[in-house]
Length: 254
Ligand SMILES: [Zn+2]
Image 1 (cartoon, rainbow, N blue to C red):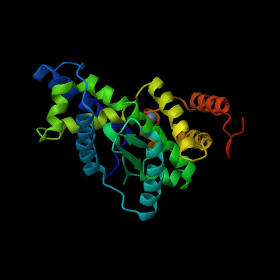
Image 2: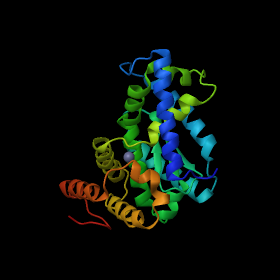
Image 3: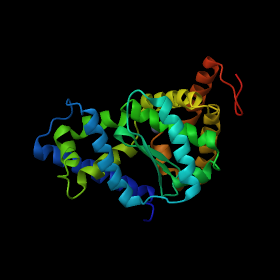
């Protein structure tokens, strides 16, 4: 599939929001309130993830898949509890990004491996950041609030034959989680990366790479920068957390 241009993406996101508003009005859904059970949350992420994957395609490259499987295994171990059936997959998309669906389905885009030059510590922190979004239910809470229980149930129980609800969930997962959630995922991501035996200071290399690329080829970074707050602030917060824990490594020594 051809990667959507930023304007096409915005248009799709906008359409998704409009459809959501229409559907909510149509079925009289509550705007939130109901909390999904763990099983429902997992099912929701799987259904929406499958739909998202059908659209983008899954990357079959052995090197990337093996690397992600190895990182995922180590990060997953330290991220529990809460218990989620984590499922890390490589998306056949050259955009530099990663996304977390509710319940443990996480996609790392092919473009991220290339941009970070297959540096395991750097990729591990991105994976840990996304894992933190799952563990803290960031996407789930937003989806519950925006779509309401009844609409989500259509997707979980297979009544979403046109895939509209699945598309809405994907659009919400790709949107900005908000500053607080992103900073929290950065911080918990450092904890996970460190506990899993990776160099947590690699986070700074990732953020500086993002800043460097931001000026160069914005088209490749449309999602990444839409979904995350300013990089300087993030680097400062990362440094503060590293210093607080007295964690040193290849990219920083407090
Ligand atoms: Zn994030």
